Image (cartoon, rainbow, N blue to C red; front, side, top):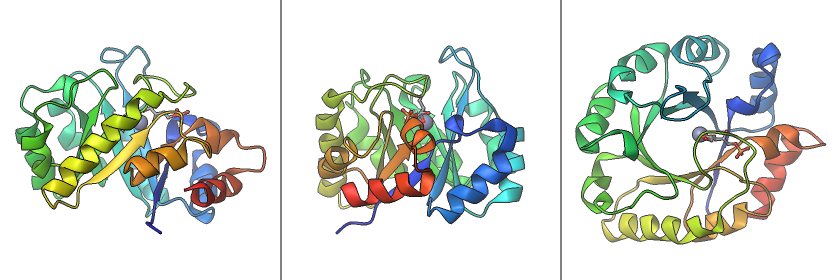
Amino acid sequence: MKSITIAPSILCADFRRLQQEVEQLTAAGADWLHFDTMDGHFVDNISFGPLVLQALRQDTELSLDAHLMVSNPAEHISRFAEAGADAIIIHRETVTGPAALLNRIRGLGLQAGLAFNPATSLEGLEVVIEHADLILVMTVEVGAAGQEFMPTTLPRIEQVRAMIDRQGLDTLIAVDGGIDETTAPHVVAAGADVLVCGSYLFGHPEGCEAAIAALRNAV
Ligand code: DX5
Ligand code: ZN
């Protein structure tokens, strides 16, 4: 059985008690913490930025992956690196030639990720994928937690999986949006390695530990 990485989305945490949330997630067996930065421009919502990531960094040794839903990622990368991110994910829609920026992220010693909204063509990914450590396939429209999983994204995960396998790369595939115990098996069967999970995990009636266990059992 393939090992799955669970990355709770901090966007769905209780911000009044972030430190305790992080402690609970760690004890519950979370692998990474997914950090959704939103700029109110690329997406409507505004969330949090490098200062909050820096604060989280003090409280955890888990890998922090910063998902930059911002129009101008190039201007923010060094701040997120200094704040202590382990991975930075930029959106395909916000860059013309992603390879240069992905290389810059790698040059800072971080994992480089490239995210695709459901409607964004995967054309051209074949030639830049070697510059990415992770491809984030959005499984809802970007910009808000709590949306319903879009099954139309499953063939996209399969396409990315096929590209990675064809080129013999070890690039990870992450999925983000509407992941729960019913959708997880489908995305994993399609080829996902990393499950970003917000509402389901934080809203589980028996707590985050039960949610993480249910996700792992389901795949
Ligand atoms: C959406 C964010 C997601 C979101 C996941 O734009 O990137 O990380 O918070 O939340 P759920 O799991 O509720 O869809
Ligand atoms: Zn995200």
